[in-house]
Length: 85
Image 1 (tube, rainbow, N blue to C red):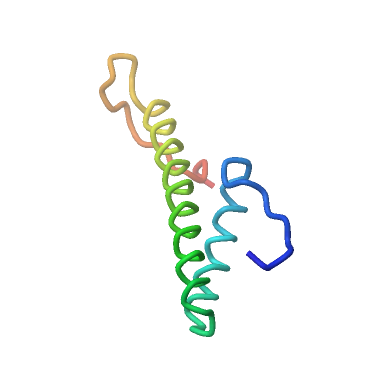
Image 2: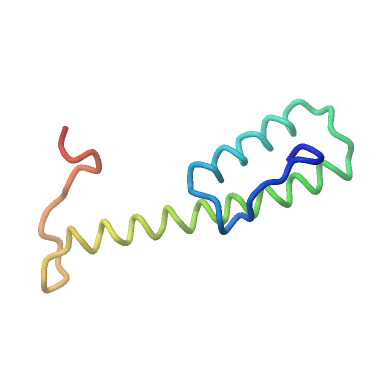
């Protein structure tokens, strides 16, 4: 969130972009050298980024659970997220 830098809207960001932006905000806030008003704005933006990331994670988990569930909806087994490698 540098002044004068154009950043994409949260909805247009990939998960990785949103996570990187959130990490940058956390770093700025942890340094403690940001003015109060900017800290509040950064925190609010960070919360929106966190919500967007959480929604994507929840969606991914639901997709994985759907794939792993049997045709009757009961668990048919587990599948490692890394493909078993």
